[in-house]
Length: 395
Image (cartoon, rainbow, N blue to C red; front, side, top):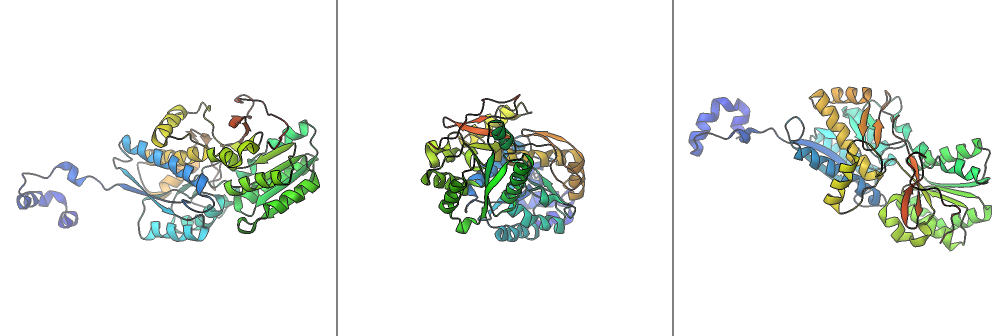
């Protein structure tokens, strides 16, 4: 078979057939090799809960593409390494995918922090990469030429909460945020928004996941007596802060927490403390976006679980990449990049459109609230499933 590849199959077909005792070799023997798509995911570490949902969405997208005949007449192989929720590990593994595995295409990792670390690799090796969980817009600045943002900006997380709280008489705010690219972008945006609304920020704090003193922060927040507490978190710290606030006997009138509450396991981990917490989503089951109903049904059939916006982001990344491949009829990275930078694409999340640096312009973050153990869409008003329930009671 090596000889056939070297000199061309037509010249050697009769010889090969005679040697193998066959009249002829079937045409499918020479089918093109699968397209290798590489990625990392946080299978382990503090980011694993949400990263797993993102990867599940990607796997469904790959399955559906293969069931439809693949791309360019070739099947897709998804090769995923565990980056252990560590940026340095992800850099090493994406380097392996590019230089050793020779991946044809790449999809970005989970979280803005890890995406920020690996995006320079995409620029160095000139890979057009959709980054489905890179919400920090600063990643896609003027020096970025190859990364494509696939999620709404982190500056929009919980942006609807403070105006709502002010309408109901709230005047003081506490903001806490993890020291990560995503969380700090959210944290800074909410502090700035509070000040522009004329609300007083009575307490603010950032923390490292490794050394976070949730009880200390909860006590300090309690002593500051804010009407609103906003936490720019991932899953573990979202759970930790909610439990710490309860342990200190403090229930602000409004409590908002990013990422954590949208996961199915959140209400199991914090129980009734989850009720009336506000959070955010860039996708929802009731969205009347193309293919959304089919996505939900296929996801539930494949995984026996309900999708979240992380699932939708992973699925949409595969869909966007497939649209670019189909439109350009190519795996050429420059052609793929140029096409994605200049086209608006309807996804299950909504219309995705980016600027010249790959920064997302079309997708938006909306607000949800846990009500009686179930997430309800609160914004936008035309799609809302429920009115906000006030106040947060902490029980």
